[in-house]
Image (cartoon, rainbow, N blue to C red; front, side, top):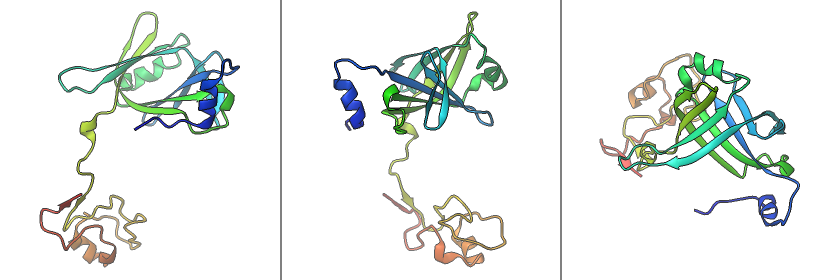
Length: 205
């Protein structure tokens, strides 16, 4: 599938010269911790109503192996001010945290849709004596995707949120095991998210 870019990006790409630059944004989200917003730049910027702090970081190339392991990419951050180090110490290297990379143009910061956006998971962290933090980021693993995408089951509700919009139950009960029997007990079977008419093995689609 071809990469979709905005009209502004096409115009900037085709210019002979420009006063603006492409900016690499890094968002690091630790569970239960304030999200960090960094930009590879010599000054802070405001994009999407968020202040992105100027930081020095380098993105490596995606590496792959022959053993079907998840492809990885390295991200090196020069944490001279020790902004990230204390957080990393508190959260065991931040393994499991989400790192999102985006590309925007400095002359079009009013466009809240990035030209490119990629989400990774931090799978390893290393800090050297110069306080350079190197994250190993896990890239997309197609084995994490369900295929076929949908399975229609006879006695199991596909709605994950009890009392959610799709479920529609508004009674006093607080628990549901997502079975048709339980849905009948709650007198909510008209909103049941399963398919009682299919076979016991369900239907894949």
